[in-house]
Image (cartoon, rainbow, N blue to C red; front, side, top):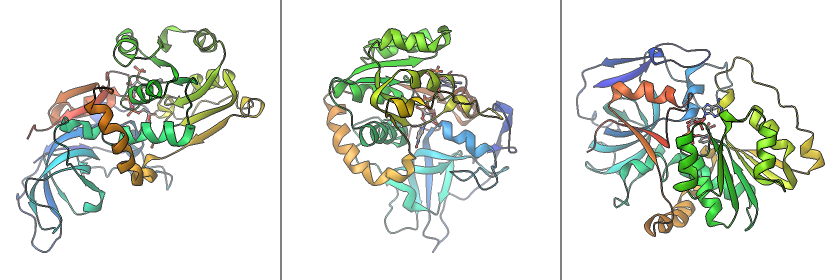
Length: 338
Ligand code: NDP
């Protein structure tokens, strides 16, 4: 059983060498009476939150940290190969918490969802139909109550979450602008996801001026994925009664000391509501999200771009690539196709 393990807790930017590949011998059979299931992992999801699991924050981790020397945990799509649990049968497909290895013995089956729709790509359950999809839906609709005609700005807009927020905002009738870190990503935003405009934040030395160019009348909704300098520039450009959905701050995750935010006073003068959320507390909305998104997928009104690497050997590189912007779209690792 090939596995990806974390060597030890880290500081700063993660490196491929922080992870190791190991192999162990296992029985492809669940112990009798264990109520566990054994799954074959098919697709594994690379998610920015996993960086926080690589550091032990003395009681401050919002998701449990990884255990050095043990396989990395994460969300994946898997097939049941053996079951001692009455609710799971051999051959069933599931998505949810698993580990970065070929086969995983899962004892906490309450964290798994059965996959019923097999006429959409299975890997979508790591993105569009998984945690990032629900994140986009909750962060945009539940937190921001968008209205037709409003001005929406999204950072890290071509990623797993951002590309969906942009498309949801267009479907809602908003004016939508996204920022991303390369020309390829900017083209994708405009030509594939239907954003009204997009810009490469790495080429803008004055983010405030860039935002004024795209939003001469200001921003009603900001979907925050990056934090830092971008957030400061956005605060200056919010409209009265604007909403900021604080989904992530990826520019800060590898810093020893987070950057300061200077323009929070704008929250008062513009009477802006800024709200953070954890998607883990919204899984009860998954059926509502599927009712919303499934018809859109089937009618071809939502498109989804994935960046796929093959094999566990390439998984560490794929994970750290999230922090350099190497991924174009949702980063997925294929362990096996069936
Ligand atoms: P992405 O697919 O967007 O991948 C990460 C992207 O972030 C990179 O491709 C890169 O794109 C961008 N990025 C990396 N470093 C920086 C930086 N220093 N400054 C600006 N951009 C950077 O990831 P997700 O869509 O999965 O996640 C997006 C955000 O949502 C993250 O902050 C994540 O933590 C958060 N999140 C929060 C959840 C919640 O419950 N609150 C749940 C899921 C995700 P580029 O080339 O454009 O720079």
